[in-house]
Each structure stands twice: as C-alpha cells, then as structure tokens.
Amino acid sequence: MMKSYYFLLALLILEACTSNDEKIVPQKYKYASLEIVKGDKQNGKTGAFLSDTIVLKTVAKTSALRLDHFVVKSKMIKGNGFISYSQEGPPANIFYSDLNGEFKVFWSAGCNQIDQSAIFYLYNTDSCSVNNINWGICSPIDSVTINATTHTPSGWNKSCGVNWVDRYDTRMRSHNNKTYVSNQGILYKASMADALSWEKVESAPSGIHDFGFTSNGTIYVLTEMEGLYSSNDLQTWTPVNNGILDRRYPVSLLVEDSVVYASFYFDGLYRFRPSTNFWRKLLINGQYSDRYQFPTRHPNGNLYVVDKWDNYWVSKNSGDTWTYIAIENKYANYETEDLKISSSGLIYIGSGDASLAILSPDTYTGDLHTYYQWNASSQDINNIIFIGNNVYYLVNYTPNPGIYTSANGWQKLDIGFDKTIRSFLPDANGKFILGCSDGIYYWKD
Image 1 (cartoon, one colour):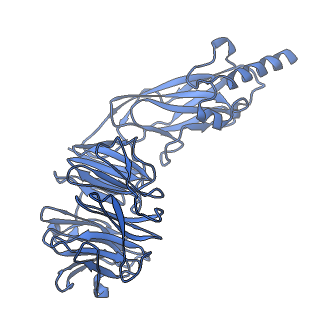
Image 2 (tube, rainbow, N blue to C red; image 1 turned 30 degrees about the vertical axis):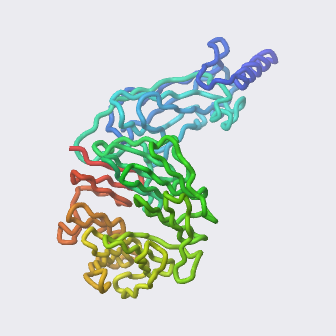
Image 3 (cartoon, rainbow, N blue to C red; image 1 turned 90 degrees about the horizontal axis):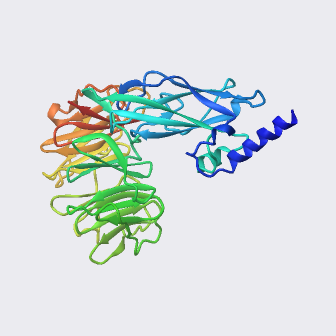
C-alpha cells in the first residue's frame, strides 16, 4: 500500500515539475485518462453555440484519486470560436468536473473556417494549482480533440471575436472600407465586406476608451489611464501626451486632420495640433476641470461641446473662446445622450424621454420627435448617424426600441432582428452591423 502511495506521489511531482503545458506526460506515468462521452463531430452555425453539449470524462487508474480534483483546459486549434460553461456564458478555458469526473462544456463555433477543432487537456489540482495550469507550468496528463464543421446561412449571423457589447463602452468606426470596434478596452478590426469575423489589433495600447481616424489613416486612441497614442500602420504606437496634466478617466474624443480634442473627467478639455505636438488646455467659462462631451464640428467651422450640466457651448475659433448657447429644455430633455451635426448644418440632439431634436444653428430652434411611452424605464436616443441623405438613430428602452430613420418617416426600421440593440453602424451597402449584449451581428445575403 505504501509503495502505491509513493509511486502516485512521484507521478504527481513529475507532472508538477514539467514545464510545457502541451507535452503530455509519458504513457507509463499516466494515472488517469480523458475520454469523449459525446459532442464530437457536430455541424453548427458560425458564431453560434453547437446544439449538443460536449461531455468529457476522467477515468482514473486508482480509486485513491478524487475525480472532482481534475480540471480540463481548452484551447482552440482551428477556428476563432470559444468554449464556455453555458450557452449564455462568456469564454473560459479552465473547467471543473463534477463528483463523477464529468465535464460539461459548450462550444461557440468560430467564423473564419469551415473545419474547426478544440483540444482539451487534463490536469490534477492536487499536483498543480489552477494558476500554474493557466501559466503553462505543468504538463497535462492526457488530452482529447473535438472536431466540428460549420456553415453560414443567409440572414442575421453572430460575428466572432467580440463577445459582449455595451452602449457606453463600445465604439464602432469605419475607415477606408474597414470597420473597427473598441470594446472592453480592446481594439478590433474587420473588413466592411465581411464583419462576420473580428480580430484584435494585438499591438494596440490597452484600456482604449475611444478612437478616431484622420483622412490619411492616422489613428488616435484615447486610453483610460495613459492618455493618447497615435499610429500610422496599427503596428507602431507613439504616446501623444505632451501638455496633458491628468490623463485619467477620459470623457470624449474628436479626431480631425489638423487638430484633435480630448476631454478628461478631472482635467477638462484639451486641444492638440500635430504640427506643434502639444496639448493646450481650453477654458470654458473660466472652468478648467469640468467634463465636456460630444465635441462636434459644424460645416461652418464652429465647434460645439456639452458640459456636465447639459449646458451647450460654441466656439468660433476652434476652442480659444466659447459662448454659451441657450437651448430650450424640450430640445435637450433631462440629459444629452448624443450630439451630431449633419453636412447641411442642422444640429441633432438625442436626449431623455426618447427625444430627437433637429435645430437650426442660427436660432437653435426646430423640430422635435418624441417616442416616449411609459414603461417605468428611463428612455433616450443616441447613436445618431448620417448616411447620404438619411438619418439613423437608436431609440432605447421604450416599448418599441430599435433603429429609427428619417427615410421611414422618422419611424422604426424593420430589419427582422429581435434582440435588443446596444449599438449599430450602417455600411455603404445598406447593411447593419449590430452590437448586442452577446456580441456583434451582421446580415449575410
């Protein structure tokens, strides 16, 4: 009995001291194996969870081992999908067994190839901690590979690579026929012709709050704690912070060819001119540390911002001096959620009570579209976008939320999509990229 104990102990030590997490321990030292119970060789829809649960089971060679002390670590071999604990859950890579040694996991299929596969490595937490498993310090005891094939039907399909979208955290921008998304601090890119698959811009700074492009392709990213960076190729990034006193907690960003504006929660509004490589602090009404949102340029050259009290300000000299604008409360109801200016010069304000105001820049009066219907929820409008002569905007939290457009008599656009939309971007072909709580969706003909 003691010999068996010491032999088992030696095997556990051997596993813990091995340094390559993909090199299985030699067969003669294996004290357990991993078997496939079900879920192999399924066919599923790209971007969606496979219909059948994947079930794996640990088979131990001795009853002295506790089956619930085994874990598996997953790794995608082919395809950009992910493995999760549930069909509603986020990606994960470490999974724990039940008392019988079974693992039940769910596979969200990737979007970048038809034939896909994932490998699962078996470990024992008595010899190797979960942290060490994640760091690749231990070798696995055994492994199995699960294969799947996929197809992409016509209609709405869930994209791969971005698995969660928030209306306040996510930014969608298009440049040079490509679409970019920042989400949870990470920058992603996709082709405008195929938004079914997204990939991280690996070299980009972390903690991205917002970003924008100049016409020649220079990108500026505004980060949560480290200020701004610029890049001409999405590979090499240069910090652009000379003159900023407090880089923390950004509020807004406006990128133009010859000037960039950025606002910070504690440090107010700044203006940057690449020709001088310096950020100048801009004072509005003598205030140097207020929060300013929605910096927006009018075709006539005027610059607009909204302060934390929902006061509107305009500058006729790119920020050197500012003038307060008296806008009636009905046009900016409760709280401004978006401010955009069309190529014709009309000012569009999305605000509380699901209100959309369209104002003249001469009188700051105009039309008002309201969609409020009582449902015990705050309602608003944001995500205002201009495509050609059409205006698109997102009505939120009403009994009839969704994308509305001027082309449809300022009413909701029926796109045959039943999930709650948190963000959207129309492309030049009239298709929509939709951001939802579980990721990004795109229409395929």
